[in-house]
Length: 183
Ligand code: AMP
Image (cartoon, rainbow, N blue to C red; front, side):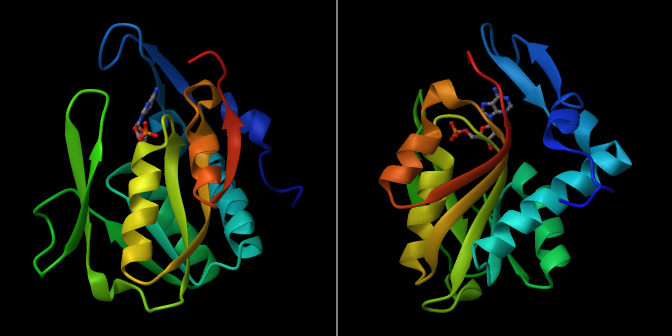
């Protein structure tokens, strides 16, 4: 690790916790304060990029919207391409999509099927893993497009919600910079 970069413990201190957002009982871990801090942003991207490089990333995929911030920056740091995984109806071409369960109801993610090549190693980057539903759906979608998905990286893990374990069951290794227990 370069001495010039903030360490994960210092990065964790830049996360703002907002109680009862978006609903009562949720501790919202807000990255706005992290990305507004120049060294905080740069160092988060640096650590994620080192993990992505170690994972053999040939392309980075990020989920709308906060995954775009970190994912695109990691792709630039490594000099590789970025795949936006989008909310429904945003892409102007014929997409492939996946529906996935939320606590209440379902959601959907879409991507350009030509954004990855068969056998290309794609590393997923998002701000936070909670239940893992979003990352698991993204893994399935990228695999449907022909990508090899073996690594997913997050700034924040909420380990009590079991998302990382769920991804490991799908043969995806999880890397995170910090965790918040008890949520
Ligand atoms: P999940 O599919 O349950 O892993 O949820 C992942 C997505 O929901 C992440 O991309 C986060 O942006 C958002 N999210 C879930 N829980 C929280 C939380 N406590 N604080 C901030 N964002 C959250």
